[in-house]
Length: 174
Image (cartoon, rainbow, N blue to C red):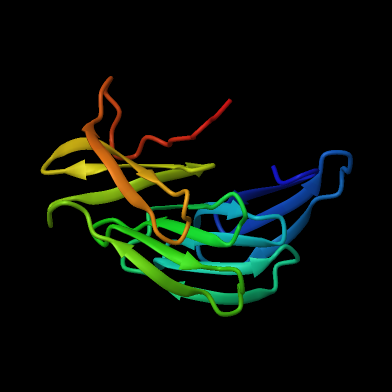
């Protein structure tokens, strides 16, 4: 939910409505399956099954696309200017999306070894968490994003309690 407007991805469509309005409009129908969605109140960031990141405005007009190696999940910085992508074996990619018509890759964070895969990601405030697989063992990486364009890895720990590489994560702070 973004303010009073919500967005729902369902296979090939993204729908929008307001919490007080029964009208539902199709924002985007690009003919490919939408696998992930994030928003910063003015734009939608979508991963499709063609391994592209599609950036649209909230009316559905495509502004740009990002070709990515193997995007699995995405999240935005609190100010909406930076897009963090869990890019499978490509690690974590950081894009400047302050101009959504001209997104730019500003940093790639390689994982500790070539057998590691970034699969789920979430950020809130100055904390970012990435869940992935490292040498056939699930792990969680914590990064400091107090400088959003320059994340710094703090620690990587084995994942516990049966979580796997597809476990969604949500960062909450008090």
